[in-house]
Image 1 (cartoon, rainbow, N blue to C red):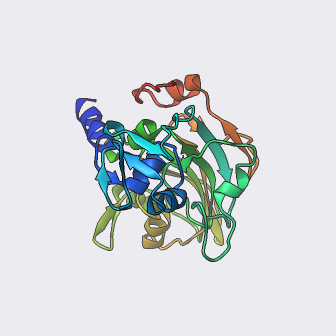
Image 2 (image 1 turned 180 degrees about the vertical axis):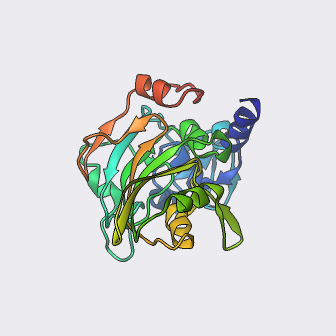
Image 3 (image 1 turned 135 degrees about the vertical axis):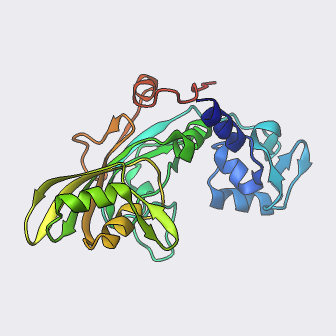
Length: 256
């Protein structure tokens, strides 16, 4: 746990561009932050800051907007059932629906913890708790992500063993923690695949390397948090007690 803790601490104290700092502090989205900064409405340690790319450590500077130091909002952790065909961004230049379209009734700005691609559905965590988000996405934390996967063709037992040993794909080693076939036919197979890292499109790339392209993918569990019966497009708040149970060792949350 020592190395993991120091790794997360380093990530939390890293310098980031000013627009991202406002987002990390829950004061504005990246787009809103850029507009505020270029309009001269943001001050850092008392001085007007108009350089979006200025590097700061969010936890170590005093940031005000319109000469007012805004209180950080209460910490929120949201569990969303992301539907297929929805992008994990604040806005989309192609006009596709985003995960934020589903967050009706939520006043606090939250950001996704990792991403699910357009065609993937399932459990997505969003939060304004940057300490928790950094810890969850730190590769050293190695939190299990469980996916329900449908692929083309019959997946043989030896293929699941290959998935667990891994494949070299585009110069990167991809491997499942476990791969279990639930049902198989000549046309398609249904698997439960567990990963412990959030590499880009890892399951799709891994199964394609094994000769079984993915046709449907849903994340059912992240650490100890389960999707359960939450309907697509619906969300719920995650309590502090749930976080403690689901993610032992996570940084203690600090409410104002």
